[in-house]
Image (cartoon, rainbow, N blue to C red; front, side, top):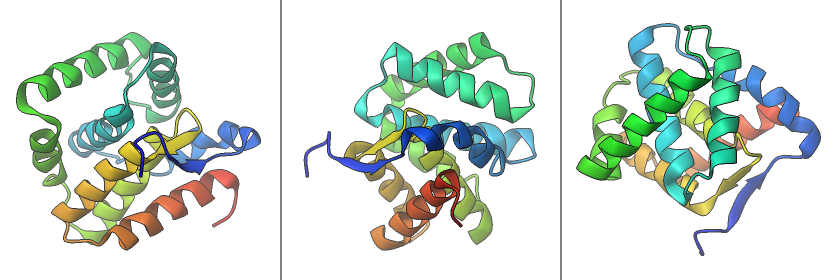
Length: 161
């Protein structure tokens, strides 16, 4: 499957519901939120992030998080994550951050959250799904389990449950 293969394409009218769907999954504590943010960013950046997609992610997260991060703070954090990935590698960052979530419910929510962050531009590509699949392996989940969570996340944006 080519890396640019589209896995999920959200309808244009559903994008206005994306912030609310993400907000419903934002961890309430700062530590888990930052870990979830990193996982979302690792997935979203797997196929490369142009400035428009970075801007969309930062704007969406700024609107829904309520932690006082503004657009420039998210941009700086993304820059730090890029540097960390360049130094340690995506796999290492993913493994370390995945370990932050212990319960099945937390893990399922963070996969959904990361999927929605990756879909901030309206599309989930194969490379982004591959990162989510790798995240699932840290929880000993099958690709089918991860795909089900991604499908549920997309359904939240589309208005279905």
